[in-house]
Amino acid sequence: MIFGRVGKWASGFFAVSTLCVDAAGAQTVEDEVRRLTSGEAWSTDFTVHSVPLSEIVAGGPPRDGIPPIDEPRFESASTADRWLDDRHPVIVVELGDEVRAYPLGILIWHEIVNDEVGGVPVTVTYCPLCNTALVFDRRLSGRVLDFGTSGRLRMSDLVMYDRQTESWWQQAVGEAIVGELTGARLIPVTANTYGWETAQRLHPEVEVLSRDTGFPEYEASGRYGQNPYQRYDSRSGPFGGFFSGDIPGDLPAMERVAALDFGDGWAVGFAALSDRGVVNSTVGDLAFVVFWEPGAASAVDRRAIDGGRDVGQSAAYDRRLGDRTLTFEQAENVFRDRETGSTWNLSGLATAGELEGRRLTPVPHGNHFWFAWVAFRPDTELWSP
Image (cartoon, rainbow, N blue to C red; front, top):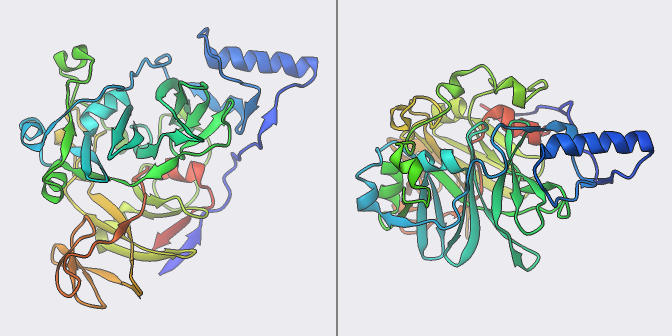
């Protein structure tokens, strides 16, 4: 295996700064704030930020013009099976005794669901322009935050805001970048994006986000299950108006990567991953494995999401089990560890062999487009065979 660092990207991060400068500078700041707010009333403290305000741009819709779901309703797998195709991508969250699935055919229209799973307040997020389907614990310093869409983007990625302080947050990394909470980070929650058939097979007890979202006009107009970004991931790069700068590394800008946010970051392209089915690696003290198999459609390919091409699905796990560190390989539609010959499924469960019934500890990861991952983790390790 050969690992390579992609190097620093030209657009770096500012340290937290206060914008109390001279008169000429103050006028510039006022102009920036006017541009950012576009006449909307914000109580955000724009004098504190960790990124250049100039990098934040309007995405089109106003604040909450893409409306988050605050009172999600759920239905059984058998009910959801009537409208979800086998390859329809769903975000699966398993906490405590609860397993919930959030179809991207709904999330693509709302981008945020404020929910509670297994007693844990979470925010389930999806930025279609970056393919970042990420879940965070929304507890911070003793309070529970609720999130909305700011209507702004940075590096083509969703900028969220919390309703408690109106600080602005970078969805791709779960970090506050403008306002009172600047520098704070949300704790990521393990979540995998599976095709619906896979999610149902691995978690028969799963509950599914209902199309009864509180926005009847969306269901009535047939939007759920449709993709407003047709052929987006067939482009050579992201929308230019929302993203600028060089994209380092050897991967195409729009290739999906399985990405782990540890150290400086780690990623493997889906092309290499699909060729092998399994990648074993280590970052710092973490020895982990990434599994891949086909079965999930692209949410941003065809007009009907169910008709999108199969881009596959991945999961990441700590490969340490007790005092053993396992090494995995793909073997005829299953995963097998070389140490015991036990076979494993995509959910990290040993299905046969000496370790049958044991389960690996999941590791939070995402399936970003390469440009989106390297924009925020410019020193990431990029795996190659």
